[in-house]
Structure formats: structure tokens, C-alpha cells
Length: 401
Ligand code: GLY
Image (cartoon, rainbow, N blue to C red):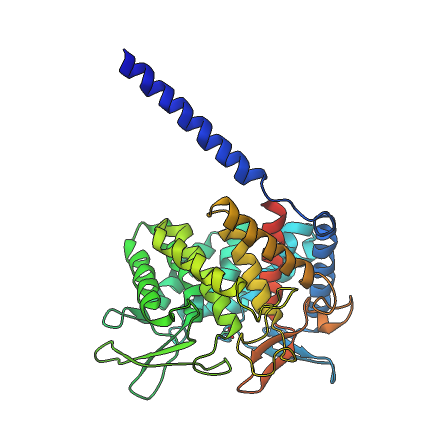
């Protein structure tokens, strides 16, 4: 009898503890009144900008960037790694504004993207297909989207090599197997595929890739290399280097953002604590870095030689903000506050000049001041589709948190 009473008492205490923790978590984030109050205007502005962008697009072309000096819009075909961001952003904007013209444009541009489901020459299928058709499934589902996403997941898996334990990022004629940290972003598509089919092989590939990446991509301070070159015969690491960063040993800002976002998604889908620990370590590296500016929009590389004159990368800030707004829901209160506060600062910065473009300018893109590939001299200090995509995603997450 006494045992029974004690048992029920413990249950009650447990329930009370859980519900008070939950209440703390659910109500513990103090949102900035000005930012919160501006959200519907932010989405309206985004919609107005994307209508401008849409008006300039030729059929079957996808926006890439815009050069203000020459008023020229650079576009791509559907095979470019960024083709999914334009429809994805339109779906976010439609969800927030209910403007049917944005939905019509999103649906229009999905058609020329469909064929990429069979593209086996890229690892970017998560970006291309999940940011587009994945969002379409949530916002305006059509029966054929599931098969398109499933075919995309199968195409992505053809690039997995069990010897290396990774999905290959870039094809190469040399004896090398190249994997970049960005590849962590493509794994969400595989979790989706396992969820809808019950076939665990997608899940296993995602987990194996993430584990190999933890092992080889990270330094002792939890910053990451951009490129790991594996020996395709043995799977051994041949070289650790950069492609888009300042130096092999530097911390390229967007790479840190992809890692943060990627391991947060890994935790969401597996609930394996090691991924949460990894995401937390990456967050500590980013937020504790002495070169992270006060407005929390990173320089394009944490070790850029000309800091504080170095260019900022708004896209890295947008990806980090979105990731932190998810990660803060998984951590203890002190960490959660830090992540939420930092994401909020990032969003406040991005929501205003100089990052947010004046209405009617910027070729219709929402944000300015992103950096694509400085070592190659391309897309330097320009608007980019993925900056807009993750900015809209982060604002939506901020609103619903
Ligand atoms: N390689 C993808 C990026 O620029 O982040």
C-alpha cells in the first residue's frame, strides 16, 4: 500500500516537473516587440520583392544573383545547386501572406525542376528538391510530389560509398572522393524518404554520412574544414582543405552554418544525443568567436585576413539564425536563451539596412551582402537565393516558436 502511494506520488511529482519545464520552455523566450511587430510587413515586403523578381525571369530559368551596377539578373538552369530555393521561398511567402500570385509562381517554377529527380551527378538534391517539393508537400500538396522526392532520395543514395561512409559531394577525374560540409544539408531528404516508405536504408545512409563527417570534418575547437578528400580505394582521409574559404585551416562562415543546421536536423530525426552535443559544440564555436561582430552577421570567413574590413555574409547569418531557432528548443534553459537571443539579434540585423534591400531595388531579392565564392571571385557581396530562403524560414520559425 505504502509502495503504491509512493509510486503515485512520484508520478505526480514527475508530471508536475515535466509540465513546469515545458511551461518554462514554451514561454521562456522573450521576443523583441519591434521585430515581432514587423513580421507581417517583412513577409509582405518579401512577397513584393519576389513579384519583381518573377517579372524578370524567363521561362525555365531560376534566379541566381543580381548585379546592381549593370542592373543584370543572373539566372541558371534547373541543375544549379540553388534551383530549389526560389520555389521554396515563394512557398514560405505564400504561407505567410496568402497571396495567390506567389503560389502560382511557385507552382509554375516547380515544373522545370521536376527532371532533377533523376540527376545523379550532384549531391545537392536535398537543397534542390527538398527545399522546393518538400515545402510544396506541406503548403500545396499534389500526389506526384511524393514520387518526385522519393526518386530524388534514390538518386542521392547512388552517390553513397560504404567504403568511405559518405555521399560523394563533387565528382573528380583524379583518384579522390570529395565530401564538403555543405552535404550535411542534403540528409533531411533521406529522413523524409524513410518516414514515408519505412525503408531504413535511407536513414542508415544519412546516419553513416553524419558519423563519418563528425569523425573527419571537425577540428578540436569544433570548427569544420570545408572539403575532405578521401581515398576512393581505402576510404582513408587524403587531405583536409578548403574551396570557398580563406585558407585550408580557416573557418569559412557558411560552412560552419551548414554544420550547425545539419547536426540540428540530425538530432531532430534520430534523437541521438551525440548529434545534439555536436550541434551545441558548433554553436559555441560560432557564438563564442571573438570575430563574430556585434550584429552577429559573420564575416565571410571567421579568419578572413582583413577583419574588420572583410565582407559579411548575410546568407551565413540567415542559416545560423534558422538553425539556432530550432536548436534552442532542444537545449537547457541557459543555452536556449543564448541561442534564441543570438538568432533574434541576427534577424533584427537582417531585417534592416544594410542587409535588407530597399523595396523595389536589388533586382527583387530580399537581402543584400552575401558572399558566394570569394577565392573564385564569383558572387561577391551580392544577393543570393539561399540567403532569402533561410531568412524567410527563420522569420517563420521566430513567429511560431
Ligand atoms: N557550396 C554551397 C555553398 O556555397 O554554400
